[in-house]
Image (tube, rainbow, N blue to C red; front, side, top):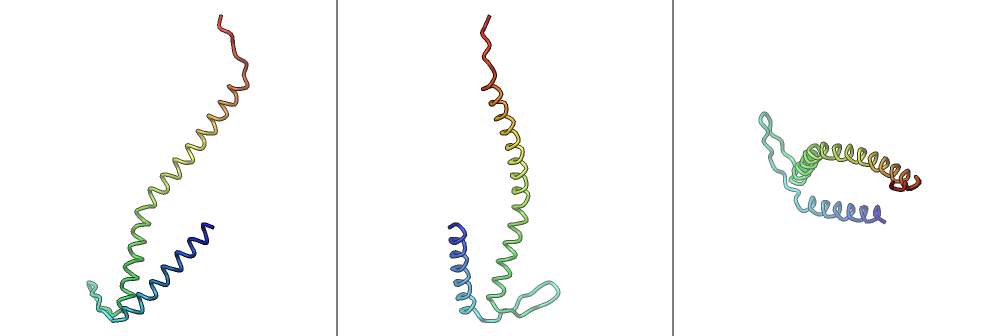
Length: 97
């Protein structure tokens, strides 16, 4: 179900992008430091969008790997605590003297 919703959203976004690209087919000049290119406006926006995605992914990766490391540590700690609870539940109670 989750995959179907993601596919539907992806198809909707792709359709909107295709409509946008068709409506913005003018050619614009992009000036770089050493060269100049003439690209359709939709391509310029698409390149800027994917450049933003790339920057966001690069900035997100340290957080992602830090959280995965913490999750692994917490799972091991949880397993050790569950084992300790199991041992404590099965051990006999000692009467106070």
